Length: 360
Ligand SMILES: [Zn+2]
Image 1 (spheres, rainbow, N blue to C red):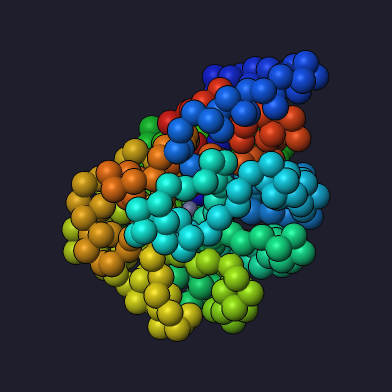
Image 2: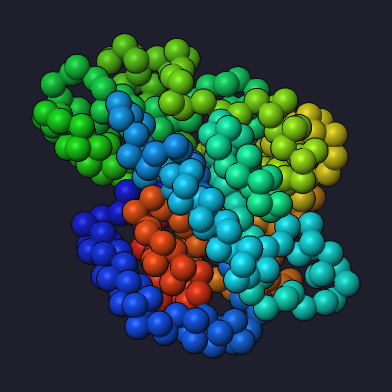
């Protein structure tokens, strides 16, 4: 899940966008991009969550920060990567590593977190049309149950409750709920940022309490917040897409007691391999920021037989033995226009998000 940026981060984002536009107009990006491509083995791993028909959907009470792009923008972005970079699969990357071969300059990987059904309905046909692949990291418990994701449901509750106040004393929150959707979204965003400071039990208890108090049970589900199904994932895999683990129940692994953390890691791998009928080698840490995984988590992921793991720390790095279990990524978000996206993949150091708040 991606987190709404703070005001400061949004201002920084605005400056990046302006600089990207300027570089584009001045025609310096191809030059910068070539310098960057020639400067080492860092691999660009793009991170998406949701692709919807529109990046500004009407009547949408879920987390708009999880909308990475509209269908049109996504198609443009993929076509751009295909033209200017070297799209690869994780299987190809692992093959290169096994054979001690360097990755090609301009190697790029496309990933999705969580497992929303728009990945199947919208992103998958576009990828297929362009002859590209992507990695879809899914939380297997949600694929099994069809239940909405907890953090997104919390946003939905804050945006749609008829209650007048939001009380969460454990987070120092006692707010009058805003009169319009824009204000509710900002409050939900702030609440989610604070929520992630609690341990797993505390997070679950708060969400469950609001479900009860506001009579908005997550088990009811909602058409705007549906996970994919196993049949859809099997179809995607048969068509050349890669499927990886995002835990069982989208828990922050470093905040779980050790035995439950291990159960999330192993359980997701077993479910994927049972349902998809083949090995699953890569995981992305739910939420994925620096407080979402630690040395114990990495050890459990390695011991379970995963060969690589992605974080949601923004950036690029060479993929090698010491970085295999903490591969950074480049978040793509709906406010990125074409210039910004192209600048970000050309020169990620300058144009990607660096806020610690951006987590997947
Ligand atoms: Zn996630």
